[in-house]
Length: 297
Image (cartoon, rainbow, N blue to C red):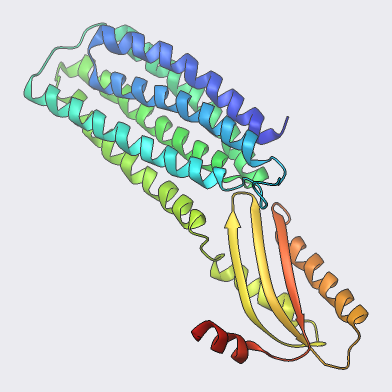
């Protein structure tokens, strides 16, 4: 089993444990903050299950129906995850507003505090593990999952502090006010996940620094006199690069092919943690102007 899939299995199991713990105490105590944390953990469970499905399908080989594979399931999963986080944040915000207008005293404070302590410790270990996997694999789904659980870590810590303050001061408004803060933080954290996923689904070009590195590799070949129509895109763990490379008309096809192979190898080394698909058109002259006219007409 791939490391990414193992990570989703572990995060799913942890989310299931946290849901049971938090939901039980959240309902018993009447705390909006604890209930919000429980709902977030329930969404974590659903999302982790979906992530496992996404990773399991995205790694399937191309077939007659999906000639380029299913790698776009990964950014799709990231967009869905970010959207779910945002929707759960809106629900938490609504519940907090209800409690502010209809203040209800909290119960079972000791149980609530101990559950949040346990949740904080468990989540901290999970975040460390997911960050390790994300750095090692460069996988977008695991990166989104790690960020999601990182927001949980902050929210768990904030809930724990709020419960301690309520226990000491008796001020019940601390609970819904914290719920509002958690909701805004969740939306803030979800935005970059959604943005990155949408850009990948729309086949946005690679970052400018990566494109500069690609150009440097092409220009290092003295036999390549020019290049044009450089196009790049990223789809999950796959990178696609296409370019027209201009060779001297007197070069043999064999020699031109050897040089193109060398360029492809250097480009793959540039993205060692990705599956790189490269298409180099070997042109005997610069036909960029002709291609532009064809695009116009």
